[in-house]
Image (tube, rainbow, N blue to C red; front, side, top):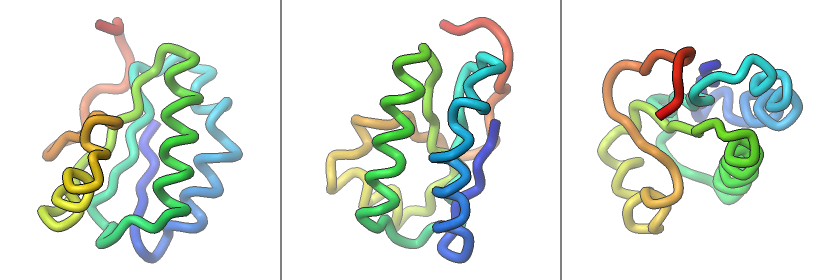
Length: 101
């Protein structure tokens, strides 16, 4: 499951993530992927929603992966220490089904 998150769709995407997380996890994906290439900053609401989603995923043995942050956003994540909380990947979205490591 891929959730695109951008400055323009942030509120709606976070709402979908919060209300549909159990549905997303029902198929036992290897990861819920949040594609963040359209984000230019992290609001406290965004951070809170992503932390909540991470907890929900972790309890089900599913990863939460942030993909495609630009350099500025990656820097914000690093400076805030959040790069240790989420798996962050630049480039293409990984496969979502299959055996977990």
